[in-house]
Amino acid sequence: MADVRPFVCCRPRVALAADVAALPYDVFNRHEASAEIEKHPLSFLRIDKTAALFPDTTSEYDLQVYAKAAGIFNEDIESGVFEVDEQPYYYLYRLQKDGHSQIGITACIAIEDYFAGVLKRHENTRHFKLEDRIKHIEALSAQTGPVLVTYRAHELIDNAVERIVASSEPLYDFISPDNVRHTMWRVDDQAASEDIQNGFSSLDAMYIADGHHRAAAACNIGKERGGAGGSDYFMMVAFPSDQLKVMDYNRVVFDKNELSSDELLQKIKCAFSVEKVGKDPQKPSRRGEFAMYLDNEWYMLSLDEALRPADAVRGLDVSLLHELLLDPILGVDDPRSSKRIAYVGGVRGLEELKRRSDQARPSCDKNTEAGGGVAFALYPCSLDELFAVADDGQLMPPKSTWFEPKPRSGLFMNIIK
Image 1 (cartoon, one colour):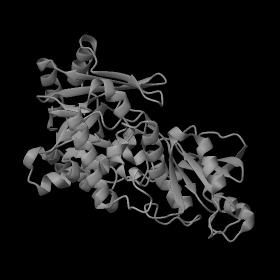
Image 2 (cartoon, helix red, strand yellow; image 1 turned 45 degrees about the vertical axis):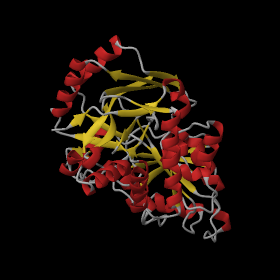
Image 3 (cartoon, helix red, strand yellow; image 1 turned 90 degrees about the vertical axis):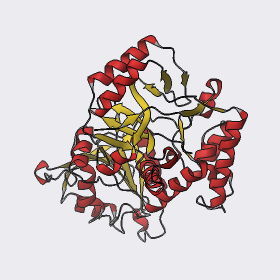
């Protein structure tokens, strides 16, 4: 049973919420974060991606970067940019964009639920990214970015959320530069709080949708400290699965593995049916379809469903693309460590795949006729597929899911004493 509790929240002053709120640190590279901070001087990226404030010669993981983040965070608390509530509350967080709406609950969940498998994960963590978040939490003595969690909708929770939205004034309500409306409520009603807590306690499973490194870092710290100072819980925002929107997570390979375009196509035709669709991009319309961009042309690759394994992980489109094409034909053997592949969230569109593929000019490509790269757009992984993998105790390949719209960092923080 899930142990989900209200928490004493550190959050921005109402008038500054829109100025502080920022997309998660891992959405930006260093230079993109620097540009965002220049446009929005109070952006939480100052604290979440502090390396953007240092010259490129300073490592993102230098200890002075974390010390600077802690200094800015403490100064913002002292100056009144952030304030701390006097008692624990649940918070509702609604995201709206282009007719889509999802509303989740910001709270803290026990690290024991993570270790016991009540809160299930579907991705592995990378050591350097895990160490980064551990150092960040330790330096600030705070968890700053909520882990995105999902669960199968529960009537008791749904009813409590509806009552709060209908009867309470929002704490924050603003539209971010990417045209997402962010609305937050503090749950002051005791009966609604009890319904939320009881609803979560009746769940057999919850699932990490995004933020595996943040979750693992918080749990490692909590375990090391024996739960002292409130480290036995970590912050999340939990959305019912019937409201989450999953987008495609696409791939660009920077070269053709020393193959000509004709050679590449012939090899691909051994595993897929291939149809040229022209110069206009076209998204896959179903599971088992892959859009491929090659030499200023788009192709649709279709998989014979008889080749799809029953295994929850090996049967994923992203796994089949790797096993049938990326590894044996393009030579991308390890998608976690290869520097020949990049991952592009579906929110950036197919034109971004084309742009990155056209710009690819790797020095290792000896075939001048085969300049540029090759890109692949996938059909989005479903939440049912994510649940099946997690329930089976397995892990998805890296970069399998992209959730949109994304919760902002800097709106809720959980201070660890």
